[in-house]
Image (cartoon, rainbow, N blue to C red):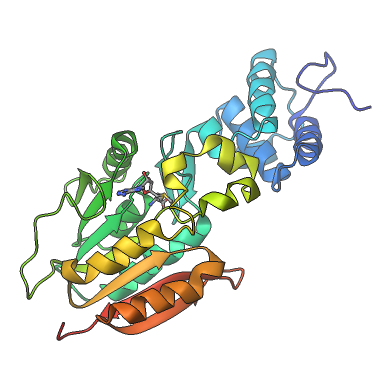
Length: 301
Ligand SMILES: C[S@@+](CC[C@H](N)C(=O)[O-])C[C@H]1O[C@@H](n2cnc3c(N)ncnc32)[C@H](O)[C@@H]1O
């Protein structure tokens, strides 16, 4: 059996530690063991990942090995890498994350791209992000649409504290307002003609409670329950967003919602039945799974 480089007195170089950790984490069930090993070792060594490659033959100090041992043990217990290192890249920006927020996912970047497309050329655009969590969508939109005003709402005060720090980190705090509450509840009631927002975007909780056992342990054991589950069919929050968003959208405004691939048909049905939207389009993620719905509010109602 290969020795554990985090405890062995042998000369363990960066290369050997990465190789050993990759094999160990693969055995423990990680689906990205090499990437995990690199991110954790860069964190333990206090350097950017690229520096591991330029120092492959460096022998690690006892302190770095000690830090790496703890991180690898926790990763082996399925703690998400982003929680172990405290940050995660999303839309080419670095976001603080903690156990109070969902770890931003690559598929959610579609919501940012579509929001930006919907407000292209609009210098006074207003965007509402429901269930903002780490603030990744709200902040990424604000950074890439430098005159837009963005509002992010979440039920979790702890998540909002992380979101506010992310807005400050990316220097958009004066254009992003974070409000605490249940979906639309913290907003002033809109006028009949103008809903107030050009875009309403949401990556809401959408896992059916009965699907809990199918979630990977990284997610089920470590990510916040109120970021994941939404009733028996996973649609409790989405139904409320579809019902209420026409009131808060400007005429011609765009609604964007992320969902789980098997929900696509029911969500199109809900939007069509609501009767306020002209175009209802399902968009696919990079794996070609249906992932986001885009609906445009009808001008006359
Ligand atoms: C799936 S997470 C998405 C977080 C972030 N927007 C992202 O894409 O990474 C859903 C978020 O919705 C929040 N949430 C759940 N129910 C809510 C409600 N009724 N009103 C407002 N926020 C809610 C949770 O606290 C969580 O932060």
